Image 1 (spheres, helix red, strand yellow):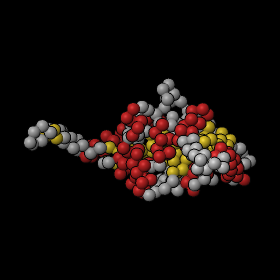
Image 2 (image 1 turned 90 degrees about the vertical axis):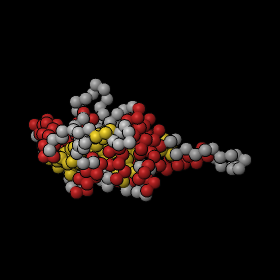
Image 3 (image 1 turned 90 degrees about the horizontal axis):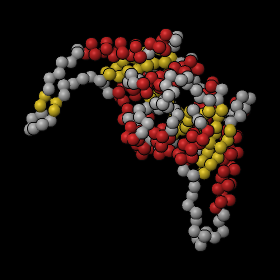
Length: 304
């Protein structure tokens, strides 16, 4: 059984971050976790307008630092008032400065067992880049990160449900770690668990070069082996309450995963991210990157 002692949920006081906070509060109740809600407010500076050889400085009357902080404290208190009124144990923190650095520093100092982040935008440029804050936190955070997209139109305020959980497994260390989280979350939410493996498609070989190779049979063999390994991956102690559905497909992994999410009405994806070398950190894993950006449901990512 996994332990989630401290959950950090950074909020920017938007409706998107409110939706993420609802997910964080649910997980905190399930795992009896301390929920820390962090709001990072900007330190205002006097803006300079370019327009000639010398910048034109426009004087702006700024509140003193203490007043800025108090405004942030009051705003966060109003933002979390509903959770507090419902009896949730919430600790509110405010910090000034760069949100990315403040979030990562808070996650390290707590230390957080889980980060819950809202993402902004469902189309166009916002959807492609997620936002610089989310991107950097995803690349740098040492703990698992749950990214929560905005609610589908017309569902704002609806109860958070994790009734169908999808866990893609490529049998790497990170994906097996993700399986442990998926099993625990399925138990807490009484959810159907889908275990998925995607056999990556290979280009058909030239029959003149490899005349005796039955490539279709080889792919079928890989798929059969994956089904056996997925079934065996479920611990004996979990079999008394959980009989996961095993799904093996072939193709481009992120496309197959997103297709399964749509077809099966998945409420949560739990997946591992491989590698921590500079290229992996920069790209955050191409499959994971596609899933986090395009999935209509929350995505929990775990590193090795």
